[in-house]
Length: 415
Figure (cartoon, rainbow, N blue to C red):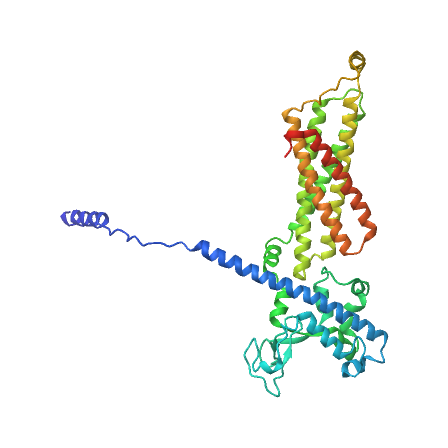
């Protein structure tokens, strides 16, 4: 028993006399690493945008050359041989490629003794090649697992990047150019170019979008279903709002409740449209092969924006009708008006806090919608769909008129 007691006391002493943990100075460098990572990502994004712009110019050049030589089949052999002196000869196309990259960025053959990516020495078998998107000199060592450069058919790349701003003649001959790699070998080579693996990765790879879509691939359809539910609720509220306007006795309390709900739902519709716009922009810039085609995302975005524009216009028209009904004089008001002097200037009615808040919310929504319409006008002009520009400009004028009207009503209580 004594032995057992001594063991328990020794255990308690060891427990109480446990050594204290040493204090180590800590230096938090999280902010520095975050700043360095942000700076690096911004540099990569700038490089990606530059490669995309040069790619668009190169596709426009090679696409026009391909279409011209397809229509003039007797001369494309001379183009490849370099003897033709026309606009789309081998020498003219090569000079245009240098202009796209920039003469200052086009590396001189004499200055390059090794590949700029793998540092392999150039030999008779390991030849020099210029990347048409950055101008650096690289090799085509087929012995390596991943070669530094390759002759890539442009038709395969435009299939992955259909949303870029190509020239109108390229878009008009899209079906022909997409199948250009299946044409005769000499003709198909006209619509192809040398590209290094660095530019290829910058052109096709977007890790942020890949991570976003791999995490939740059904998010797009879930958001569109939410948009359809909001659309049904907004349509129902418009019917009830119209019934209240047509009724003999106006209930201002119900009208305010319906209008506040409509403004709230319209804000949610604007958020859904912004999501579709961001998704469409990301898919167009990345060129990923997704289960959802970019055309479907574009249709979702256009559907949401058109319904949003119609809803705002309806709300504006109903508000004008309500204001006209509220300002129409009753019999008692008409008697008081005749009793007043015709030269007396009436002061504008004061707004309650609730009305000021509602008009401010409405002004915010219409201002945001104006920016969306301006963005749509700019994109429509770039796509040369001038028949749709007139309608969008009319909607913009209506929104500007409503903004001016709300600012006049708010007066000093505006933003």
